[in-house]
Length: 429
Image (tube, rainbow, N blue to C red):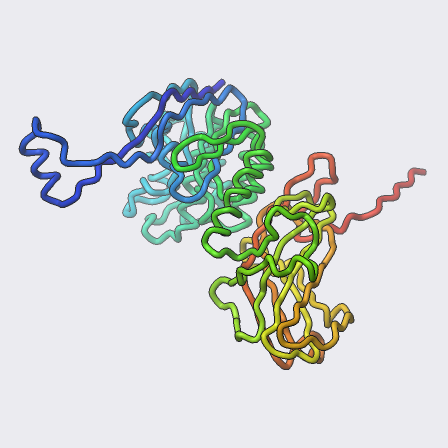
């Protein structure tokens, strides 16, 4: 069984004020240091016990990849130590070690030997490697003609041909197509269930909640939480909301309030919500609030698919609108629209609203999607017609809010885009 022990681990890089400072320090080694240390990680202490599945989360630059590189030995720590027992399979940068002029088969033999397998063992596993990779005749073609996805397929197939004692994954599957990602995650789950110790870095919080039994949250190179994945994700999401708020974020929230937006408290919402690339802002209205509220009246961006949530969207008008309508769209990480509607399509006219007035729409539903991360797009139009078009697009904001749907271990397992929640009836004769 594999185990990882990290003691007082830290990593720092030298920063020099000029290019000549490095040379001067090298020529005069006993002089005063001419550099400053930039600490990427500091004072990390934790243990991954045999059979545990531990997720590492944090924003870009938190030190997640650096940590994995030190654990696997590709980067040396500045302080502290890493102790590992068991055979390790590390999926960090799949395919990076392949020689472009050698065939996929030849590279598979070389990669397998680097993982500690004998030539005979690799040869016996080759049919399974080929079957899992599914690259067909390209197996005997030079790797230089491979796409990045084909390299990922072959590299993952080789790295996981044998079940390792320890599996370390760092977003290595982000390049692969969705079908292959599903195969890979199924193999990873099988390894976990068979007792493989797992260390997993991912920006997909849904994946961490699904695969991991424990999570470590890194912030600015230090551990701020080590324990329940849900608690780690909740803390991470809360920190993201605070950081977005400080930079005039995508979300308007009533300070410390759990109640809905009303005429009495709407004046507290002063920050205008902005969207991602491709958004439309005509200046005729300002979106001042987009948020999810759960059944307990709390702002949230993490919930189970069967939870009842309310999506609240608020606008303040800067001109008269005689037939305004508010709508929203939910998209998955691939950009596929999971659901969209608006008050016009729901046959719910709002009526005219004058310049300076406010509009608030609340859509209550169960976000019964596959566990993953999703984004919300919101819009305001005037004078609806046809199947859902508008004469005037007043505001259309992409990616104003992201949320995560968690897997409920007690609910029915399903796959696809939307949960139909079928009612089952069985008869036997």
